[in-house]
Length: 98
Image (cartoon, rainbow, N blue to C red; front, top):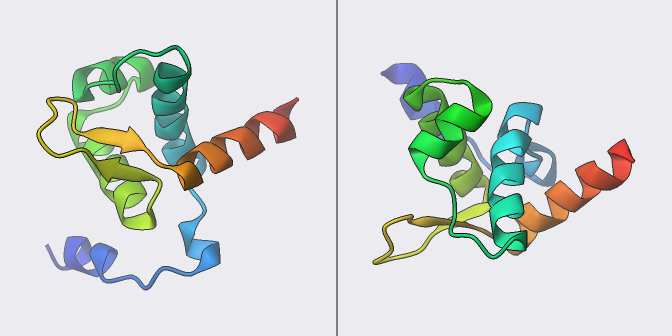
């Protein structure tokens, strides 16, 4: 439990706000849904798309929220949405790849 507490006490700088490759996969799922005018992906959809556990998805989403790339949408069933900074990181990764 100490490690989990430390994880959320990290001070965010520009360098630490950059998503990891695994976090970028999650952002890409949110980006693709928004671009296609679909609702944000559920935890189950993310688990299937990324072939990872519920805990892995939860941890990545938690970090992305802390970094400001995902935000909670109150009152919504699918409560996370991609933010402007999340979109920027996805677009950068697409440009770098292509």
